[in-house]
Length: 314
Image 1 (spheres, helix red, strand yellow):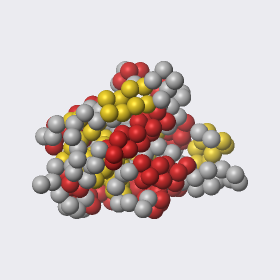
Image 2: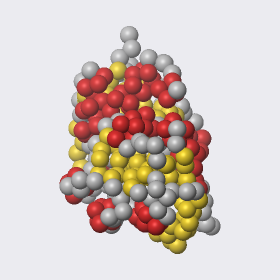
Image 3: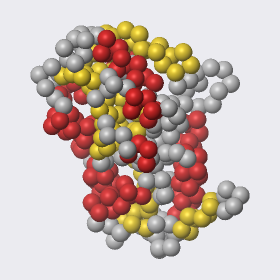
């Protein structure tokens, strides 16, 4: 008889517990020990022999510690004779390093794929992958779950009006924004962005008419919020009435929280719980967090039952 086991990493325990409640499956908290020299030890205290195991671990800060914890947990499960091991990674780190951008640089997203595969994972489930081609780095089944049903529902209920327009913060996000605009039956526009360095962006021109519109910037993540703040200023200068932002992954590194809090042009930031907010971020009232637990639970349940995952979005 098939048996499902949920194993929670330490990076996002609230999300793991919510998924456990949705599936009505008890959560296994592995015994994770960090030694004084920084090494990580893992012991699975429940019998997983022959079970289909789902390890829930988001690769959020501290990224490398959480990554090693995931790899060591997968290895422990493999050596405990689990039938299958699915790595459920709500936020996939190193996804922006998906190609060589200059000589003598790594393709870290491919390295991460190799590490996860060699550790013993038999399938990966993630959410809103930054670069879709990363799926091709894996030689095991890979499901990229979209957060769009959650974000679209919120936009329809709280933001959508006759003068709403979807905004892509750069040319690379146009396909994603076109999907949202089609579902919301509204127009779209794009911001012509120039990067002057790593994590440094300068918004230049707006491609489209935003005058008198409520703008919803749609992206997969907010890192330092430099792009977001510049985009808000450009949209306001272009005549926009209100500016919102929807992003799946609230990375919020460096000066991000300060920039968001001090950006008067920005009405609200809507994000998901793929990365848990810090205490400082929770104090900022304009940040709204939506739960992905139900969506991920359905993906896990369908994977376990060998049902279609893609039908969640059709």
